[in-house]
Structures are given as C-alpha cells and as structure tokens.
Image 1 (tube, one colour):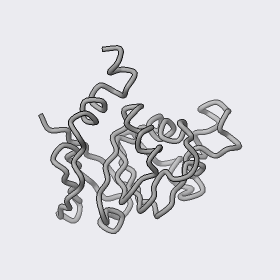
Image 2: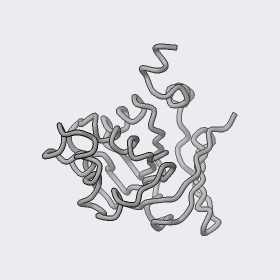
Image 3: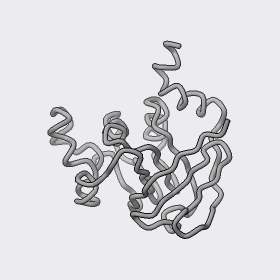
Image 4: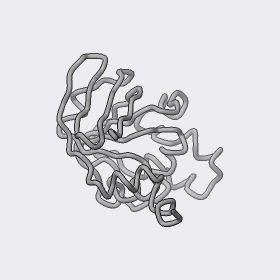
Length: 161
C-alpha cells in the first residue's frame, strides 16, 4: 500500500536550524508558550497560519544545529504532516523518524514550490508532485524500515506493538 501525503506547502530556505524550530528561550516552557515562536524568525506568519496537514519544504541542511528533540516535535504538534528538503541535519532526520514525523530528501525541492501551493508526496515511490503547477520531481524513496517506523507512529509505538 502506498504511503501518500497531500497538503499545503510552506517553503523555507537553506540552513534552517533547530533553534528556529525550538527557540532556546522558550525551550522549557509550556506548549502554549512555544507555539507562537516555532519558525517565527524564518516566517512570522508560519506559527499563526500553519494548519494540520501542511507540509514544510526546506532547502539544504534543514534541521542543522543542536540535537534538540523538541524541534521536530514542535512541528508535529503544529500538525505538519511531512518535511521535505534538499538535505537534512543527520540527527534532525533521525529524530523525525523516531517520533513518526514523515521526512523526505528531494534534490532541488525548494525551487519546485512556492508557499501555499499543494503537494502530493509518495514516500515509498519517491515522487513529489506540485499539484498546483502539475509537475513531478523524483525524490529518494524511504527504506522499508523507515516506512514501517513512520506508519507505526515512531520508534516507541513500534516497540510497544
């Protein structure tokens, strides 16, 4: 069975670090304190207007910086359904899979979308469609092990099962 995600896109640039997703000053606050500041420095409208099912598209080195586990958790708590980028910080990628937040590497993806467009992502098949512009690009399909982990909702859910 295909693992397809569809949603509205938010495009960010290169080198979006974990501090932008989980600002240090709010890191230990409540979710209500943190929520208005998730990626606020990169796009002040994002925390105000992001909706469940939205997709984050980044450039190179998305999720670089510290290994803040709350960075991908904050995006998941906002309802982000998937993150696509040209490349990722290694620990950020692993943290996303660990919490069950779908993530996919796709060369040049940040130039294929504008914020607000619609995307359709096939995580197993490795394709990314810009539904608004009606064009498809090839991405790196995820391994069967990562797909299983994501379908189960992350490592802890998989282990409990």
